[in-house]
Image (cartoon, rainbow, N blue to C red):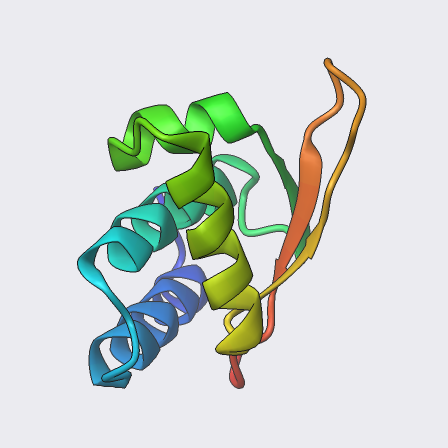
Length: 100
């Protein structure tokens, strides 16, 4: 069962996403996948993700689109992203949204 405090963090993320007019539907799908990884990591401040996993969850089929969306989310101030060039280690992501 998820505690109320953790639900509040996810709600803050969702409210921030829904109020931003600069976000595309593809960005929203990728954010959905990031929230999925965040919840699997038990709401850790920094969590690991894989490109293939994020693309599968968000239904993004092109790596070019994936990288464009990641870049956009960084520029809009939603996430910090530290890429991993190692095949088995995931990239590190943390939220930059106030209140998290």
